[in-house]
Image 1 (spheres, rainbow, N blue to C red):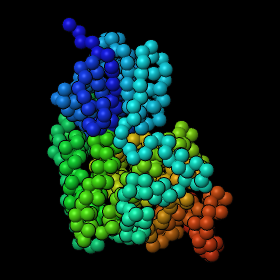
Image 2 (tube, rainbow, N blue to C red; image 1 turned 180 degrees about the horizontal axis):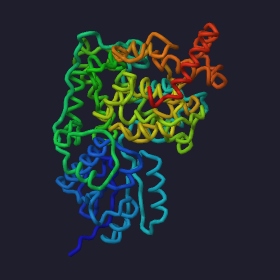
Image 3 (cartoon, rainbow, N blue to C red; image 1 turned 180 degrees about the vertical axis):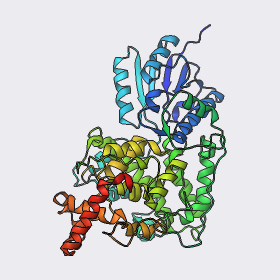
Image 4 (cartoon, rainbow, N blue to C red; image 1 turned 90 degrees about the horizontal axis):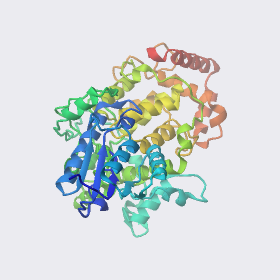
Length: 514
């Protein structure tokens, strides 16, 4: 006899929260469905590791639910009954099982949120949307906090979150006497300093890899499917969290901006995929970091802990709030009207610029780069070169294992490309080769000379930096944070200025050859 369910609950690939209230009780009348569908694999060129990680984590989560006594259905991408969209698959299941109610958790992506709202509007059965029970904040909390205030400064929101959730607070004052220890967190790796070997797992994702490739899904990057080292379940995510707090947190803040050709993770937690898929909650990550600090405050200085907490309680929650406050208009913003095509070497790493070559090849190999590589190397160059934000978004959204639009587009189109005109950042994040040299060893043995601006082998970052500010002077000249930049530019010898712009024009005309 065919089973009959009353409720169909849809779980998205980034809703793998085993602690959600949905799973408190086992109800045989409730059917949970997770699905691998082409609408989600095809909207960008995903890194093969990202696609495999999500499929493996989803499949494992469905199996875990089933073992816990929940009724589950997992639709694989090659299943003949898979109609390759949430709506079509749900409609088929509602008909097949006589479903009386449809339920889903609020998506974190605007695109899916709109699709599911439209879908529910057309349903003839009842429906209900639930919170994901993951974030510290609600979707509209940031908008309410800044209502009537001038600007949307992250620091103000971060301090409010610290107070509200009583994190690193001594009464009404911040622990350590300061809210922000960022100035202490800008060191490069000293010579002969070897960070901890990153904790890697040994997952076999060959089944997921074969499904993806045989379906003809276009992907980028490389993978060893028999030895896949990202966490794909909650147990591995907790193990990675424990490894970070015990071994890496003590150096995290100091070296969080450092880059090195021999190191791809340094002291970063690499928890972002597990968190964005909701295998870990931000609260338990911060709680674990606080416990490690309280256990040994001599080993873990306050700047290490605060820098880590700020990334989660500050930036992560802030970016999500901006996303829901400003979408869908945000994804169309292009303040500088940049229109250039993304150079092909962003997809291959075949460039003579060592910093970009290393950051891109690392991304292709590991589906990962830390925030300074993303912001001040790949993002910085795209901004200086005037690359169209749509193309930059497409690349970032596909290449990183943790990239989901709510967190990607705010960091890319907003913070990195300043395409929002200053909603997120108070000035464009631009830098010449000097910054990259200060934070890394990338400039060592590079084809280009970091110390010159105008010669044939001068680092493109140097001339493009000045060209960018000259090109956009009308839009940036009143920004008080850039007054020194324009004073230095104006004091430069006119012949030198002309030579800098000539070198920049050459670089812009020959982007593919750099």
